Length: 300
Length: 281
Image 1 (cartoon, rainbow over the protein chains, first blue to last red):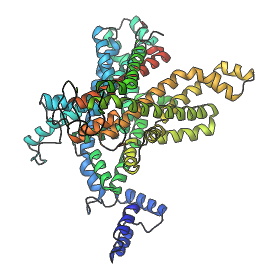
Image 2: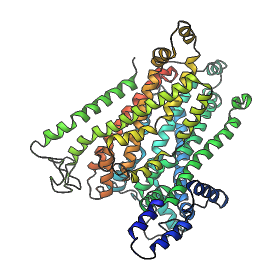
Image 3: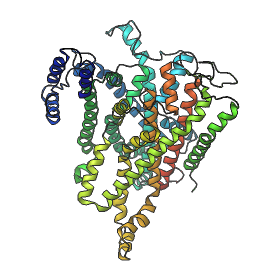
Image 4: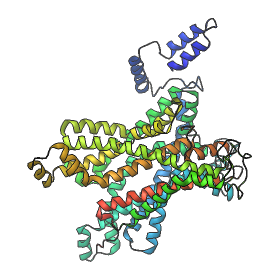
């Protein structure tokens, strides 16, 4: 912000009265105070004034908070949706990949998941755009919904929205799901080596019962923990996808704000990202003891 | 060591490295008397033909020659960043794990702090401020934020190795700390170091390509990601020059695949339970 106003005053320095305007804005944004006071003021505004990040520069007089909240649903929807779908699919596939690990189909599946998991989601996105969007013309390649439609609860809008979201979702779900499947598979395999499974088998339990009550339940714990961690850390992972598909989410806002050097908006988004990570790790710390009796008993 | 994943990963990676090294020479051989990389060497946006397998780009440069010349910088960035990250991670991990106590607490907190850093937004911001990117700066920056994971893995291993009886024996026989760390502990951790190196390389290349893709990376570097990014911003998909997107993307994917295979292979080497071959009836 300093730099921005500094440039302004130098550029327009010759004109009468500009210095006054600069001084006015410095006071408005609190730039006449020392840096550490500015930081405390920023914290106070964020905590006690309802996430007040200050006004946005590029869309003045709209506040940065309004801009962020306006675009947040897109990111949250896209990301949380993709995360949950991929986790469910990946876990289920992974369980069977671990259970039937000597089956021929399974090794094929493993190969596919390894390839998918190694692919960065944005590269998959480009390939999907080219093949599904342009060559096959099955789905619209980019944009949040059809041009000329207004967000509303009409069938036309929802239909168009869903169609446009398939490709971004797909590029996230395929990559994330493959990762979940692989981790679930190795969890299953490592549990299949445990002695209590041998014992369960010796007691004559049905394979399905062993899978459900003995292997699956134990393999679930790390997988659930991983979900909570990933929910926080990869929120920024959708930013590039948003930019590629022109989805008006936080990533899109971030890039635009960068172009305008809109510090308040940038600070807000970064704070949100960090906040998401910390919330997720708090939730996981609270939930894990409920699921895993071992942690509850020993209390670390 | 008969590990299919590790071996196929190494084979694929060596093939790509050879392609990266010989790439510029191949490009030269394809266009013997012309400067295929010069701006405006050919008409712009030429459709694919025998002379230009995937057409020419917005600057009139043969895209295939550009791909061949871009693999090496991409790899070097990843590798430099990976080495930096691994180096930092190993140092922090060993210090925290071996000295323990307060040092461990401080270093662990610091590691966790860096770990939750939203790296992508940070890099996006830096991308707009640092005007003169070069290969070295880019990889150092990527490396500086890539070490926490390594540090955690190494620390956990050092903690458990430190308590082994053979370390007590070594201490009794009079080796000093330096010798213990480098001759007794480190060799046992080499698979982990290799694993971290591959992880760091993948992470760095992933971030670099992602930055380039949205046009905020190092503009003057010719990496595969930069090529895809330029293509995206000039809209080459819209005019049907799909090859210019698919070929660099495909090579990047293969590169990631090979490193991931090596990673999984190494994981199986030090965690025998993951091996599918072992029969557990």
